[in-house]
Length: 264
Image (cartoon, rainbow, N blue to C red; front, side):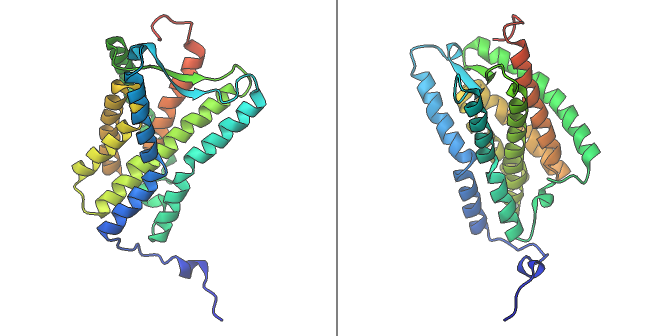
């Protein structure tokens, strides 16, 4: 009996996927990941809008305690939650290998470490500062909840978990919403701008729980990130940028909250 080798099981040339199959694959991927998050975010926004308090008087906690008063259980739950949340990246990697590709196809690798890091850092500086100013403006206008980036107990693992949460967001969102989605929509014959528009609206939709400002701000971010992915053909700079933005937000909030007057 003949046994297939790994190279025979996964031939080199990429498969030509039919648009119908691509649509089904994309629907499945996002049904178990950020698409489901978008639905939850919409329900949470409706709940916030129908609550007796105004939006700015309510909080949207991004990384909160899962077991108050029990730090070791809290740490275990935080790590498990991060692992489960980022798992769809593994599904995408598997599906791309099945189609004769890999994450390297969308530029998720370490082939250009220095260039990706520089591009990511510059992008983070531009988007991060603008995003903070926009958030403060929409919060003052009353169309956004008070976003609390981190609300963890002040124990030894607070900063490490915040760093892991930032990396989780960067990897999950940029691999799925920038790299994978735009790559597949391009294979399905979508125009670049139509694909970026869908990707951007999706990015904004799973941030609806923050309010209308969170939606609009992330749609704009999605337009910028999407066009840069299409230009560079690499998602890695976007992963770096997103991770840096969230790192500054999470860790910075932990150290600055209550110490500066301008931070809600």
